[in-house]
Structures are given as C-alpha cells and as structure tokens.
Length: 199
Image 1: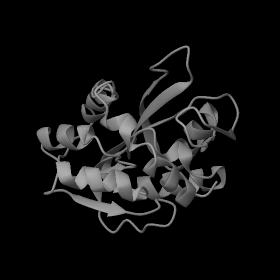
Image 2 (image 1 turned 90 degrees about the horizontal axis):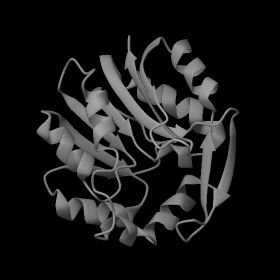
Image 3 (image 1 turned 180 degrees about the horizontal axis):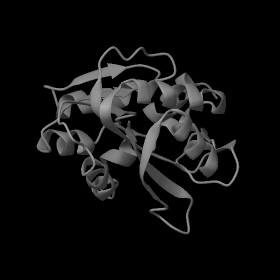
Image 4 (image 1 turned 90 degrees about the vertical axis):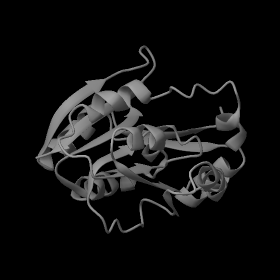
C-alpha cells in the first residue's frame, strides 16, 4: 500500500478517534517521558497528527510551538477546527521536505504505516530535522525481524511495517543519536516506543 492509500483509509475511520470511547490519554505519559529529556522548548512537529489534538495540547502546555502533518485530509479538517491557530500540513512524510528545525518531533502510531523501504529514509529525515539535543519519540512494532503486513482490524485494510527492534536501534546509533528510552508499553503486545536525542 502507498501512503496515499493509508490516507484514504483513515478518511473513512475518523469516528474512531472522535468517539467518547477513545482514550484521550493514549500516549500522553509516554510523551511526557520523552519531553523530560528535552533541553529547549522551541518548534515541535507531530507527524501523523490525526484529529484528536491531544499531543498538540500537551506540546503547547509544555511551552513548544507545535505544528502537525498528516496524509488524511479528513483528519486534518477535524484537527483544524479544534486548533485553528495551529499550522497543519496535508502531506506524505516520505515526500515532504521539512524546512524547519525542531526541538521535539513525535511520530506516534503513524510512521509504521509507511513502506518498509522508506523507514530508514524517513527516520533519517526526522533526525536531520532536529536541532542538536532535539528529541524524537515514535512508536513501532517491536518485532525481532524487519517486515510488513496488512490487516483490517479498524475496518479498511491498513499496512504496517517495522525495521525490527535491533534494526531501529542500529539505525539511530549509525545516525549518532543517543538512545534515551525504549519500552514495550503495552506488553505482551508488540507496541513499542523509542526516545532518541540528536547528539
């Protein structure tokens, strides 16, 4: 699946995140952990920001100037209504040029949807877009090996990919990052998040 197909899929399921059943605290404690490593509070970017605005609210409350990027125009329509003062960009992170530098970037439950062949390029781009000592937090499937699969758990078929646990760690070490935190936060599920700092 191409990222544009992921956008079309998410256009059909905005109701999942807009429902009262959605846990608005999902990922918040993990982000607070990541933010605890940040030395400066300048620009922040939410990659695959979706429509809830919960990370935008957190980042604003922590003194950042956040912006959001998502491939789903329906998600962004909702996000813009909730936060009309925030800059949201509709685009594919695989192709977007990030012209600013950031002290904090989050890619929560988002870049696992990009093609496996693009994982290294996108993560390299995100690290390059950080200021020195900037922090990246992202979630991924903590598999032993790299790979990809699709499922229709949320309704439409959606693609997932992962470099595997050691693959991600190797990449960030090659990029000269400091590994600050790694956690299987929904164990025994494979949902994993990683916090890295640009050295």
